[in-house]
Amino acid sequence: MTARPAGVRSSHRRPAKRRSLVGWLFVLPALAFYAVFVLRPIALTFQYSLYEWDGIGPSTWAGPANYGKVFTDPDLFDSLVNAFQLIVFFSAVPVALGLAAAATIRRIAASRLALVARTVLFLPQVIPLVAAGIAWSWLLASTGVINQLLELVGLGGITRAWLGDFSTALPAVGMIGAWVLLGLCTLLLLAGMSKIDPSLYEAARLDGAGAWREFVSITVPSLRQEIAVCVTVTVIAALASFDIIYISTQGGPGNTTMVPGLQIYYLAFSEREVGTASALAMVLMVLVIACAFPIQWFAKDGER
Amino acid sequence: MITAWREAWTGRALLVLMMAVTILPFLSLFVTALHPSGTYPPGLAWPSDPQWGNFGKAFEAANMGELLKSSALIVLGVVPISILLGTMAGFAIGHLRVVGSRVLFVLFVLGLTLPFEGIITPLYYQIRDMGLLNTRWAIILPLIGLFMPFSVFWMRAHFVNMPGELSESARMDGANVWQLFRRIHVPLAMPAISSLGILLFLWTWNQFLLAIVLVDDPAKRTMSGALGAFQGQWGTDIPLLCAGSLLILTPTLAVFLIFQRHFVKALLQGSLKG
Image (cartoon, rainbow over all chains, first blue to last red; front, side):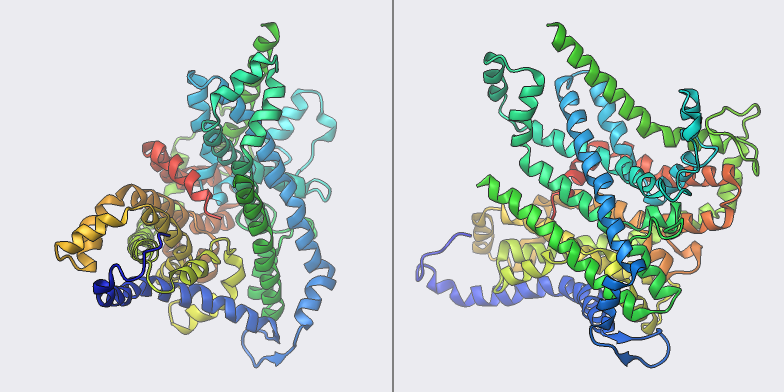
């Protein structure tokens, strides 16, 4: 912001004040939509979370009981735990592979392979998550391509219906998320790499550093901000996941892939436990903000 | 020299492998879609007698004509209004710096990371009380509200960097605030506006949760929501389901390939939002 010396434009003060009023007229429509369809529902979610309500009849005051249920009912609590486990697949895998892919693409930037790779790796990001869910459900089915490939390399013994198996369903769902998010991370990191001063690499090479050493001591530290963005986006995608799981497993088998988003949907619209659904929704919203803001802060702090 | 050569080739091999994994689901969808409807084809196997007619069948079964129209109507309702409101608010907050613009900005930013599931329950009752359930307005109106944080954030980032002298000289010439906005700042903001438009198009087209909760009739949903219904109905007919999925993801793919450069740039900048 530019601080204007006081008094210099005193003759403009009245119009400036009126301009501010007009300015508010510019903000008002956006604010109205935001208030009616976002802020009000947030307040209502909080209100509902304090009541027991089946969505039809009268509601009874429940105080913090619904929140107690979120943290003590194993089904509800497990959905939160699952969401955090998904972070490993939604965040760690795409960021790690994305770094490797971006570093490679950068090294061969001029070649046709690099150009094609940029386009191809990005494809999963633009299709509906629902379509990704359907495609992968079929890929991971007992007669799907994954099992076919495993048999081809002599691992026929471990084939199974990956999304229907209690021990593999969550990792399998996680891999779908990793598949979707890999391209976004790769291109974000690639954009960051193009901003790194090439003389840093020249200096390192003069010191006899190999590619790995370059990567660890120049590339990764310089990408601090981009990595933070990737982590933020993917962590939110994991915590708030819904589409992929709704399509591929519906939270099953058992409760092994249940996540808060899907649980809220079931609680509110099939089990008619609006209060509990709302308490879980509040917890989810707070968790997302609690995860997103520190990561961003950390990155911006490092910049200064 | 030899290690550098080896490093380059492991890198390339890894890249090719990642591309193969990325393509695999599309390939699998495509090959499976060509098998006779109602069969249970094994993984990746080229059918002896490719059933190209499956795409036509799926087009009819999914009522694709209606769906395209419905999605287009929803996009036309959401995107232009969101852009207009977001640009106006971004202009007032970022450039005019109205009284309280900092507070307004923080208020909008708080909504940036909001998971839609968090407010879907009250939204359902609110839309019901407005009498809008099962209409396209049930998707359009909330989406405009839900897109406001990002749109305002995005446009503000553009307007904050516009030099104040630009407006001063226009004011000297007697332009009022609306003329200033319409004649000078909107034309200059076109790159930011078109990126925003691409992102909002994609997010609307792919919106799933609002569609399945607020609209029962698949023909009034977004493409993505309709695909969910299609899966429920045809989930056992794998080839037809695969053909339908391909048809439904083709429009986004086409838009992506046409506007590729713009698209990638917009999405990358868009993810910097948090």
